[in-house]
Amino acid sequence: MSGPVRVVAVSAGVGQPSSTRMLTDRLTAATERALREAGAAVETEVIELRDHAHDVTNNVLTGFAGADLAAAKARLVEADALVAVSPIFNASYSGMFKSFFDVLDPDALVGRPVLIGATGGSTRHSLALEHALRPMFSYLRATVVPTAVYAASSDWASPGELATRIDRAGRELAQLARPGLVGTSEPATSAVEDEGELILFSRLLAAQRSAAAQHQR
Figure 1 (cartoon, rainbow, N blue to C red):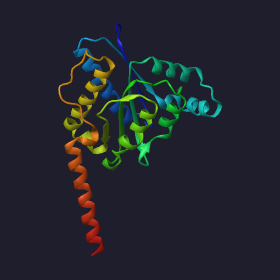
Figure 2: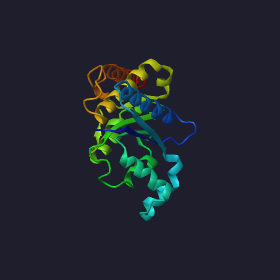
Figure 3: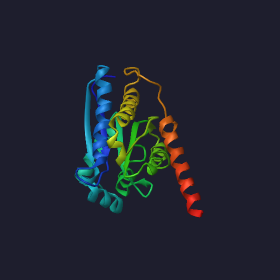
Figure 4: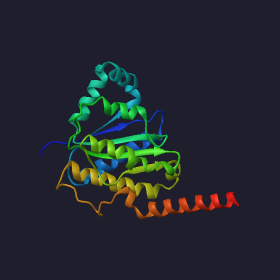
């Protein structure tokens, strides 16, 4: 395969600046870095959904996309790999994020490598990646990388741990974007299999049960 690897990222952050865009940029940079280290040329682009919010709504209602949204969708379809990041509201992706992928052609992402990420205020929402985002992209027949990256507010205070997950996910996406070109430095693991995260989750459950028992007393 010749030519640069085209990586398109979709950021569904609603603020400006936003932690969602921050995570999007870091995941995109990690993917680009892995590809360049392997000698590949890379072209990257970020689509800010907040800039297309009205067009997405109109597309849902009328079935027709405005010129800017149509161009953004075309660039997404032409990409070799996708980074998709949404803020988590009420334990799921944002409505704007879902609506954007609803107005894509149903076959637009078939076989496309996708790295999923999400941001939220609490670690309690981290499983939204596995019960909301991953099933959606699986339904669209995309190929989702094993490592999903969730960044809670507290994660930005521990940059080393977050950076490790970002780097791993970026290398996995690079490997799928150009099979055989990029090697991984460690075995790919699913986010739900991350030992540290499982320990943290079990401790959270234990703390909640202990607090509930004390309250009943």
